[in-house]
Image: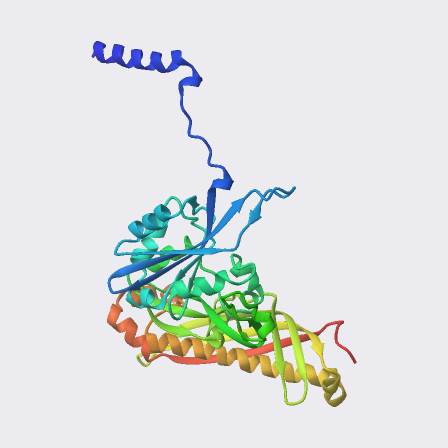
Length: 398
């Protein structure tokens, strides 16, 4: 024992005697020698993962602003293991790949249909990937979506470009940390979707080779934009359905997640705008005559922000308010019903109805089996009351 203590003291004396200068600390990696990854996509096909990274090179520009950000370059690799696919991408790059700034992770439709558990587990366990990155789903391949997104200006800030859709309830937000709940047994949830839309009016010059200018020929192609609208429904780690824009707003109305939203309403010959839209809903769940009965009371509030002159001339502002209230109340009611019908058709309780029933009926809930829960959801009866209270704002013209 004494010999062991003496040996330890000798080793410590060697370190301390040499001073701090003998401790070789790793040199910090200069930003000029790094590629920053902002976008990451995963597809799964034929038993293999395809990992797609959107990379930015940051280097010295020679000007006062030393950070010159180049356009996003897309790098991909395919392997049966995600870790090995990442290793292939890193090995193929001349600069070090930095994953700490990943803001967006996109899952392709085939991966969602076959199961996202292994992909989520990989990113959650990774020490290099930003754990607050946002997760999205797409219809189609994630690699193709990243390629199209990388061609857009400010493509690395997807969430900021769709803040209006988020506030109005057409989508939601899901971070890596929040996604842990999707890995729980028999869990259900939603993943926000990215949709690619072709703008026929906004044209771009076609990319031509051979030295001829596309602008000179007048040859153009439709411009592709991306929006955040709709939700992918996930049950037991697999996608089982989709909520469209209308159903997504119904989901957020039930979750009381619509604050300071906007809504444009078109009537036959005039238009009305509403802002500061807020939705508050109360949900009660019970079992009556062997059936799940969901009762929802939803109230909306907001301000008239824009009214066309034709509307004022025809109805007066007070008449416009009444029609807008009726329209918003009916629309939100229909949105909630669309969402609840998807709960019934997919038998996925992504809204949390069973939890609401459990709070009031704990003893009877414990007696319900997993099969009975699905049967109750599939045969659910929905009752929705919706009323809007819209106020005038100073912007309204008379």
